Length: 332
Image 1 (cartoon, rainbow, N blue to C red):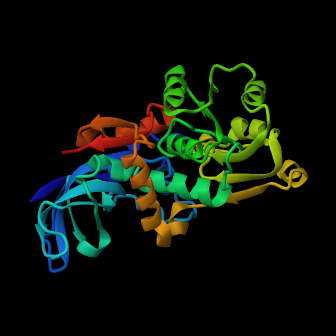
Image 2 (cartoon, one colour):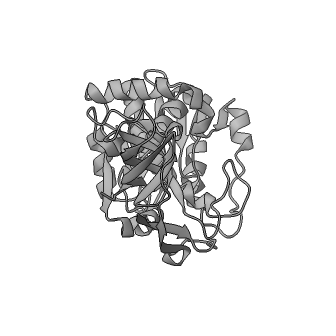
């Protein structure tokens, strides 16, 4: 059996382009004892993958040039040599961008696709949902009545953070890059939402949206939005540093206000984190997220692109703000 696969053709400088992706047809190896043959159903595209396209040292090894790109994939088991994963099982795992692949049965996790759409296990009930859960509840520890600000609020992680903060009884303010996304955040229950691209006075808009200051900040973006939020921090504010998408394609280190003085004066906590830091507690997070979803308290918005050949375009669209909620590609 042959399969299409997508390789990293070269490392980008600045904003990635279609030239970084190479399509190739490869033979699928026969599955052996303890392995499964998988048919890809959905592929996740995520901002963190930009970092893996670079050779720079990070918290995860970079993609190798000339080798398949990999990431979150939901797949169906079509051939099994692992008793715990019968044919027809739906699984999630870190898998190559291929139509078909072979994996160790122990490297993928079966998901209850009868309880939620299969793609949700790449979003609301998967890595982004867990990122929101642990970043907000473990690091920020919001209390009822506090003000929570979320940057990148209409994205896969931010949209869940805001909903979780509302469940905790907080006032929630989000920033996003279009009027449509602002309207979407209001639908999710955000108290205030700001279009940072059209707001002439971002600092003033944030101050008006958070008249009692900011107790918790979930930072997905960095840059000017974060600079403005830091001016509004309350005493003992907590900041979960999740992403810095505004700088991912920068070719020079950006220069901005130094935040240390503001953190010092407000006795604020700033903690960076990677969701894998909480791997031992993932079952806890999935259980709670699933309960809230089943109760109708969490919604999972998706931007679905169809077709294996469209995976690079969907990935590149992340840096143009084309997605609302989780960006996924439906392959089969």
